[in-house]
Image 1 (cartoon, helix red, strand yellow):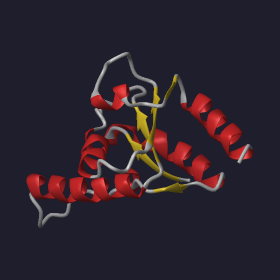
Image 2 (cartoon, rainbow, N blue to C red; image 1 turned 135 degrees about the vertical axis):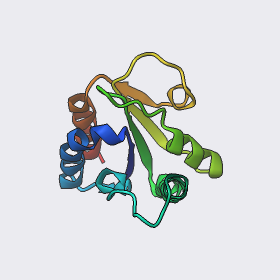
Image 3 (cartoon, rainbow, N blue to C red; image 1 turned 90 degrees about the vertical axis):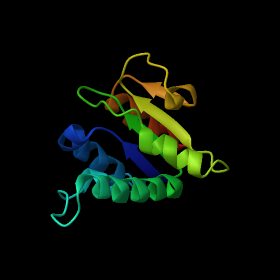
Length: 132
C-alpha cells in the first residue's frame, strides 16, 4: 500500500522509526518531507513553502491512504492533506489519525479510523495486511 504520512516537522525524528516499520512490512511511503533537507539558500521562505506544498499535494494524490500524526508536539492540521484531497476531489483516500484530541477539522470529519498510539495503528496495519 502507498501511504502518505502528515505530521509536524518537529516530530520527524519520532516518526522515522514508524515509517521504517511500515516499509519493512512492504508499504511504500510517499511523504518524503520526513527526510526533507533544510530550505535551499536561493529560495525565500514563501518560495520554499510553495515548492513543498506542490510536492506534498502530488504525494497525497499518489497515496492509497493517509495517516495524520497528532501525537505529542505535532500541530499540523493536515493542511497539505486537505489541499491534496481538494485538488483531486475524485480520489478518495482512506484516512487514519494517530493521537490528538477531539478537534474537528476537515480531516477529522473524514477519518476512517482513529488510533490512540502508533503501536495501535501498526497492529491494525499488520492484521489488515495479513488478511489480504
